Amino acid sequence: MNPYYPMKAQVAAVRQETGDIKTFTLQVEGKKSFFFEPGQFVQVSLLGYGESPFSISSTPGDALEITVKNVGDVTQGMFKLEKGDELGVRGPFGTYYPLEKMAERDLVFVAGGFGMASLASGVKEALHKQNKFGQISLYYGARSPREFIFADGLTQWKKQGVKVNQSIDKTCAGWKGCVGFVPELLDQKPPSPRAAAFVCGPPRMIDASAQKLVEAGIPEKRIFVSLERRMSCGVGKCGHCLVRGKYVCRDGPVFTYAEAKKLVTDG
Image (tube, rainbow, N blue to C red; front, side, top):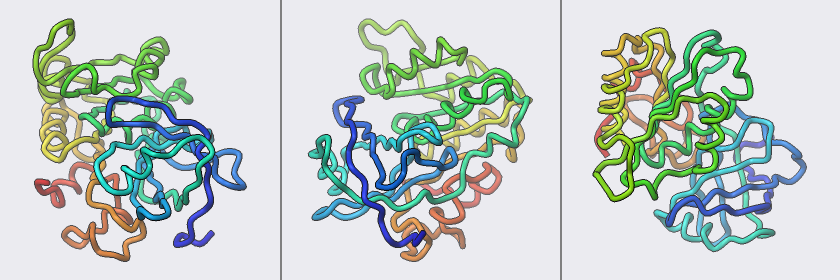
């Protein structure tokens, strides 16, 4: 399949996650199921608006789902889409969270804000193959309770045995959970040093959380972070995501923390 040529896709469903985040279920022409590895992304094109990369938030082998935050021209166009509307899809692209190599280990997913969109497929895949792993834990921070995405999913994951630890940035009425940033949550409830960790969120949150994971005894080579924010074309041609000799879209977006430390910059 030509990586430069988009496949036709149709919107099968739209789910509102928060005020500015929606999840789109897409039916790709000629594909009953969409196969990919957790942590990979697709390029979505919309006539009259352009093309952008989006994390895949569905379970590998199910219908393709992408979770979109309304922050730019393409996403503004996508927020106007309804069931039956058409768009283009290229991919999947990029490196991924190596769950298969972590058999028998505890799995720790660490999300900051919209970073949960990238990690969702990893949590779902881990639950699909739950007998291969130890304890599955999620550390998830948001600005406020209203900004947690996948509310129904979080409830279901808890029922399936995932230890879900949530925190918000500031105290608010009705919130009985932890207050503080994600690294503080990791301090309060440190994971097992035998675990493998997967992290996605704002750059400073990634770095601070990874440092806490290292302090908990998890080696840098077993901490995997997604640096997807710099991507544009998806195939390493435009140079937009080139950082110190690495194309984030092609050589990443998932790197070990040891690799990522050489690449991460503010922004």
